[in-house]
Length: 312
Image (cartoon, rainbow, N blue to C red; front, side, top):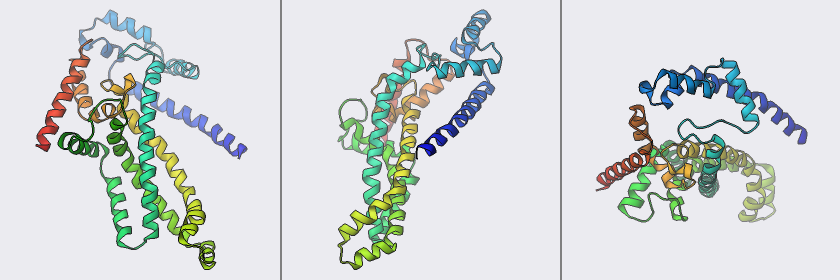
């Protein structure tokens, strides 16, 4: 086991290097000048642009830039954010707790819904219950996350007023984003649980246990489910990375509260509204220093008004 683990870690090193090199190269091949964009576009003077390019090391050859990046990454130094001026490690440190909490909540929802649903579907195979469970899992995989989030907000926040649509304190603010993030994972886990348990229930040792007179609860809970959960655990492990990716995509947006450490609903649900609006305004050079909070508030107000019109 230890040898296998060492081999896997050793194989991961060149893979990480390859991915980092490709990402670094793609970013350098994209059109545009980061120094020019950081200084406000064409309005910046050539002297200021050259000075910033020299400060950021953008005037060095590509291979030198990549070598500097690797040396800094090994030491835990990923440079500074062009937008805020703070170190990237500090941004990660302040954002990571909220991101981890939201990802863990979504994973918990996925497991708590997916495993029981898959077990019931396997035990009631080829019945209406099984077909209904398969239908739910198919819908869970098919429905886009952003659409589900907006639908839950329109119903539970604006129409019924049961749960908050924003904020970062208390368990109630975690319900809607956790359900939204966990629905897709629950569908995948349910399908895997059903498939694995159906296969295990056909094994000879299960038939032997039933022949000995053991009840269904003991046969399923003590013998079948334990073996059936082995591939399910692998699926759950993959879902850990998937949930973290989704949360990171949303909570690391500059306009979201995730970078302040309180990314719950406010850290993902406005990714489709305030995020898009902020990106458009930023592309038009309308985001100025000190005005970002006002723009974000305007985006939220417009989004809330649009949702209210939809549910009215």
